Amino acid sequence: MPSYGPEVIGPPPRDPDQKYWDPDIQTMDPEKLRALQNDRLGVLLRKVFDLPVPLFRDKLTAAGIAAPEDVKTVDDLRHVPLTVKQDLRDSEGEHPPFGQYRFTDARAAVRIGTSTGTTGTPTISLWTRRDLWIEYESSARTWWRYGYRPGMIVTHAHPAYLYGGGPMLSGSYEYFGMLNIWVPPPDTDELAEQGLRFWTRVKPDIPFMGFSTGRFFEVASKVGIDPKDAGLEFKGMPGFGMGKGMPLMTAGAECYAYVGGACGQMPGAHINEDWAVVQAVDPATGEDVPDGEWGDLVVTTLDRDNGLVRYDLEEACAILREPCPCGETSIRGLWGGRFKDLMAVQGKRFQAAEVESALRHVTGVTEPTLEWQMVKPAHEDRPLVVRVEKGAGATEDDAVLAGRCAAAVREHLGIDATVEILARETIPRSGYKAARVVDE
Ligand SMILES: [Zn+2]
Picture 1 (tube, rainbow, N blue to C red):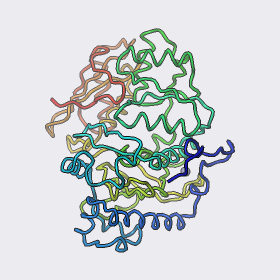
Picture 2 (tube, protein in one colour; picture 1 turned 90 degrees about the vertical axis):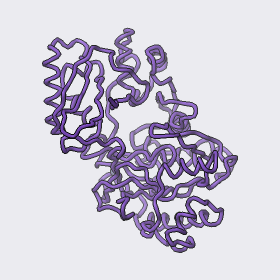
Picture 3 (cartoon, rainbow, N blue to C red; picture 1 turned 90 degrees about the horizontal axis):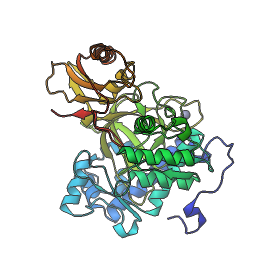
Picture 4 (cartoon, rainbow, N blue to C red; picture 1 turned 180 degrees about the horizontal axis):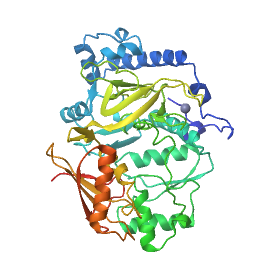
């Protein structure tokens, strides 16, 4: 546990010109880093048996691991069974409300939240002060890589209350030492306007970036606010769009919100290996897949009060081990989306995000924002049904726009699509993540 005092509220100041937030860890010799992981893994497994933590203890003993000493190193983790979200959900159902996978009593924690519940009943997350401190320190490495520094003004529009994302992001910005403007998610035009108006009064140094950036642009044009006056600009996150997949930045609020951060020099994100063992695993065998290939994202958290052992997020992950020219020594991770979101049609497997990036190439549908939906494919051989709102100011016939969209989908994904062009504001808007795939 950190001692009580100023260091609990904030970190010691750093020289703004230093290259890394935490140079000792971020440039640690990989062998030393591995030894640190082995030590911390031993402590975690010791707790599983001694506390005990029944869900993990029972899984270990069922796999023939009778004592923590049976798993000596990170390499031995391949013998440890995987745990998926449904296991946590079942445990909470059988032993409500917290289940039998906690390492601390709920009253030792200071924060509680739930997952979004997009894939079933939300599970409950608990964080002690130490757990929050690990998340905040992890995120600080990333903010520093981006060039953020204490004293800057930053903003976000994450959902709040029981959903853990908003408080986590706000807390991490405040811990880092930035002035944090938390505006409401732009679920309605009125809420979007509130945020925009506030940004014209107190302009963030770091422009808003998030799933709902397009929403703010759309409402700005409706209510006559120049996006520049609110500090808005379209800007990609560092390291995105390089090679396959996205940088592995998060392993979910319930596991490790800030598991990695992109330096922008190479594909992927640097993994905080001092606080997690991150693996790309073949779930059928439990073995790591070869480097650079997609496997299940499996995370074992280290050095926390509340941990997860071999937690399989059922999302695609690839691990890269070549040294990065930025000087950081960790492995890097790529994220390839949730397996549940993977769709198949006409012999191709793809994700909604790939359809979206294809449509972004089409002029006439992207201004002020690209708004679209697709019907989840139910028949292997039929064309994919895609609906796209006509862009503001587009003068082309709907048929011409539809043809361009279908051509873009064919070019980028190799899939035949039937595209329907809709009037502006036909598709429901969302303040956070828009629903792009509908069942029909
Ligand atoms: Zn790097």
